[in-house]
Amino acid sequence: MTQPNWNEDEFDLTLSQRTEELYRIPNLEPKADGLIEAAVLPLRDMVIFPRMVSPIFIGREASLLALEEAQSKEQTVIGLTQRDPDVEDPGTEDFLPIGVEMAVGRLLDMPDGSHSALVQGRRRLEITEFLQLKPYIRVRARIIHEQNTADRSTQALMRSVLSQFERCIQLDRSIPEEAHVFALNISEPGWLADMISTSLGLTYEAKLRLLMILDPKARLGQLNNLLAAEVDVLELEDEIHTRVQNEVDKSQREYYLREQMRQIQTELGEGDIFMRDAVDMKKR
Image (cartoon, rainbow, N blue to C red; front, top):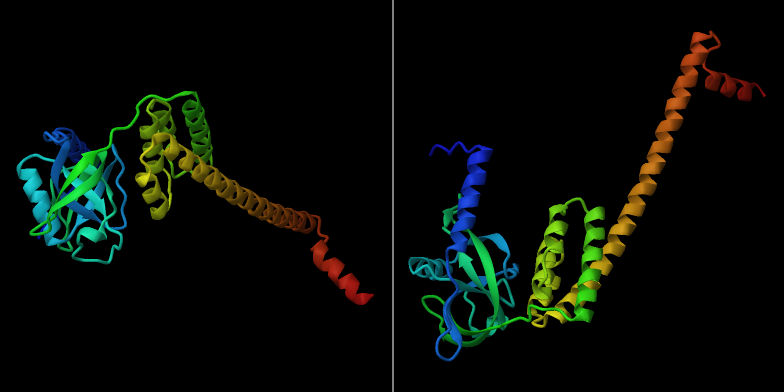
C-alpha cells in the first residue's frame, strides 16, 4: 500500500481539525436523579485530566464497540483507570471509583491493527453503579462539581504552585515556556492543579493520586509538595551538569594552552618544551 505523503502543514491542519471536533461533542445531560449514564473506556497506565487533550490507543474489541456506540450518537464516554493494567477483561472490582467524562475524536487505524484517537477530558465523575459489562461496560455516575473561586489561603497556594512551576520550566527545557503563561491566566484552583499536573513529567502513580483528590485546595497542596520535590531534583541535576561542564571546559582549556605552547616552541625552534622537560628529568 502506498504511504500518504504528509507535509507538516497538512499534519498540523489535520490535528487542528481533529481537536476542533472534540469541542463539538456536548457533555451528557444528567437524568432526573442527577446522574449520567455512559459507556466506559478502560484506561491502562494512563491518566486523563479534565480539559486535557491527549492521544490514546485502543486495541480491545469491547473498547471499540463502546467508542463506536458513543460516536454514532455524538456522546461522551467515561474514562476509568484499571487497578491492574494487565487485566484484559476487567469487571466491576477492577476499576478505580473516580473517572473522567471524555469526548473522543475520530478513530484512526494504526499499522499494528490497533486504533488511535484524540480525547478531551471534561469533568470528574464518581461511579455509582455498573449497568452492564457486555458487550461493553456501561455505568451510572455522579458529576463532581468543583469550587471555582479561591479564598485567600487557596490563592496563596496557587501563587506558590505557579512560582515552583516557573522554576521547573527554567530548569527543564522539555516543558514549553508557553505552559507557564497559560497557567498564569487560570483563575480556577482545580483547573490550575490539573493543567500543571498534565504538563509535568510526573510518575503515573503521582498523577493518579492527583486525579483522585476531589477537593481543589487539597489537590493544589499535594501538587505543591510534588513540585517542591521536583525542583530539588532538577536543581541538583543542574548543579551536577554545571560542575561536569566546568571540568570539561577546564580540561579543554588546558589542552588548548598546551597545544598553543607547543606551536610557539616549534616556531621558535626550541622543540617541544614538555618533551624537553621530560628528557631533563630522565637525565637527572
